[in-house]
Amino acid sequence: MKFKGILKAFEENSLGYGPHIVIPNDIFENMLQLAPDKRIKCTLNSSLTVSRAMSPKGDFHYILLNKDVLKKCKLEIGDEVLVELQPDISKYGIDITEEMEEVLFSDPEGSDLFHKLTPGVQRSLIYLINKIKSSQLRIERSFVILEHLKKMKGKVDGKILQQDFKEFRNKIKF
Image (cartoon, rainbow, N blue to C red; front, top):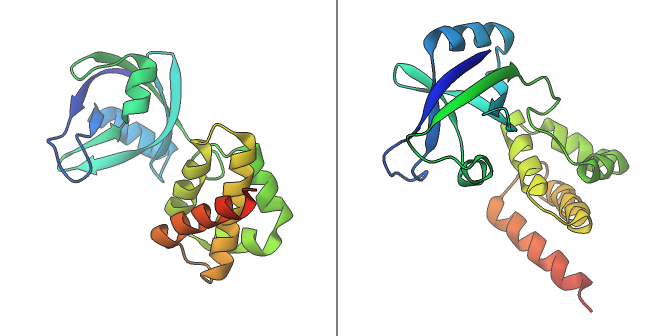
């Protein structure tokens, strides 16, 4: 489903300025039939497709963007944007790197713990890996995440996970 929207920003808050596009109510209702979990693939100006959620705010729904997306699409607050929405039928609601898939496949215990996490936490961990450019570093971080889950009995503690990343990097330096 396609529509034209205006790139807006929420007032400054703890989440940042929140660049977003409001979804017209009729489009939202139609998309909700196709994507009851509200996970969508959003294509902006026919140039970039990103995985997102249709999020509620008061009496409307919106698609939250970030600075990286704005930069890639050369968008600024106030710009008109051609938006195309499709249901996100991917397993995690976000694309997963080949490296992380392989690490999950190679570690059944870690994979079981990962798959017991809520979908939102799974997406957050996948996003941590997706934003890494180096293939080797994606493998290392995926491994550290699964080791963290085992150590923490299936829970994620962000501060401890960051420390685990640092400790792993320090161990492999020579």
